[in-house]
Image (tube, rainbow, N blue to C red; front, top):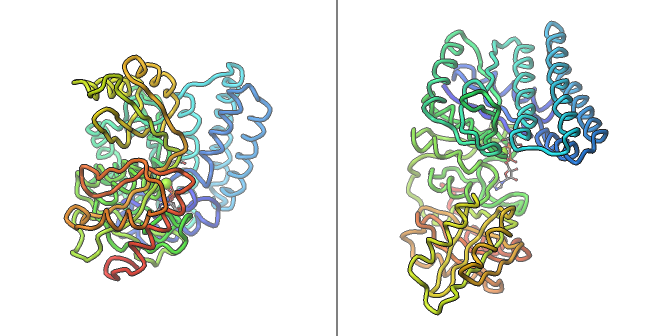
Length: 457
Ligand code: ADP
Ligand code: ASP
Ligand code: MG
């Protein structure tokens, strides 16, 4: 058995979905469980609609909803067979009526909760997964739809819910293997889930990758395939560096670090279930399915490559906290972290000196309150629009000179913070956002101008 996950661009149009049907059709012998994202930018559109409605822009919200419906109907109607056409129409009618009711309710209230945002954004994957089932059936394939909200169980942290692993595993194992045994290709939406009491939740933006690895680990599949719009995991984000190289193979640890530090190709939690169950993950391009992609495994073959890839995170805020006493008092760090903890704001990087602490956050909704509390016992300042840039590779931990190469490459750039991760798989730096492109280019030049062909393609 394998899990095949297709991202938004892989199912953005009827043509893209036809390509996906072809990819699945040629792998039916591997008993695929298919996890699918919302079509194209559907989730962004749904969130825009929610925003308009909660600002009481009822007309605008309903117009945008109507446009989304037209586009889904126009793509989906090219895919369903004549026999299934009535079923498609009923499905879209029911789902869009329910959405319109939700949106009207929001506009009347003029406010919205994270729970409502999840309820609305879940429609993207509910629709795409159903459409893919009809598209598979139209090609004569036997496909079964599973509503992910019946099998992926989470806590009620709306917007970034955490799965309850035992329950999820039990439900997946009770539901999916029998459908596979009956010869079905199982199709389910990524990203969406529900609480134990059945309230819809989501796993966070980009969360379909996480759904795929959760399903793969629960069912003990041979491989989790992440089909996307690039050839695999690359040495840098190709939107920033078009000539980045593809990695043939990467370790779980390296992939997790890259995802955590912003490489959008994998959701940050994707690797957790894969590591726990030791299931290989392969990143592949749905537009070039013949490519070999990037294989992510627990141990990579020996190679000379020390740095494997460069990741970055933009829109970071650095908070500087200075003790109001001369020497850092005992318990100072604990007090600081307690404040962040109580405001549910996670800290990415920390550096300390005797009298001051610098740390980075990427969420600033609670920052004003955090600063106010910190000012009770320290002097605080903060700098927005910073970036974290991070070089990743297993061998960084036992190779001298990597830091020197990093600093040499960034000779002209002001580095505000440096951290060598506890895992020692990465060296991370905080720089001004305006220097980001130059920094990534310089680091790429320093580490990847000559590459080992056993590792990079
Ligand atoms: P999907 O919709 O398939 O989930 P995403 O847009 O979430 O696709 O992720 C794929 C994108 O991730 C690529 O188009 C690329 O722009 C971006 N990306 C960032 N860093 C990397 C990297 N190191 N390797 C590959 N892609 C990356
Ligand atoms: N559709 C969701 C999003 O756009 C989840 C995903 O694509 O992985 O964030
Ligand atoms: Mg994604």
